[in-house]
Length: 100
Image (tube, rainbow, N blue to C red; front, side, top):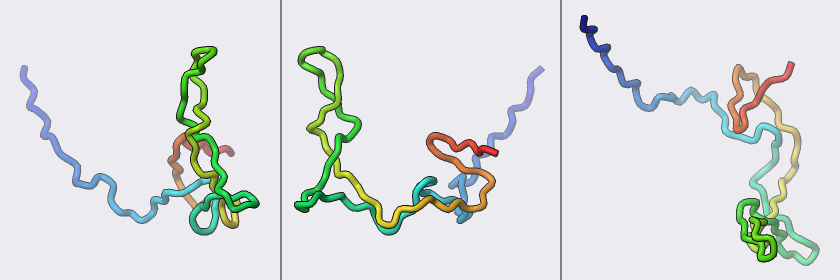
């Protein structure tokens, strides 16, 4: 017995409509303006390891941080805990799990 093929329906594009209730922001920290590079007493920009770049250690042969790969250390103006909106779901990376 042959079954008729179900009609394939393509969802309208875009799948997510502009509901104006989705926010892309830091869930932990609110701050004013854009983060700025932190500076030392002489006015030089402070930097830190980029947390990605590695090199092979010449003695052990293991992968170790490449301290020459640097990025600016950022500072945030008027940092404060984030105020959470009323929400049914919070999606994050890693996903947020509400604790009662």
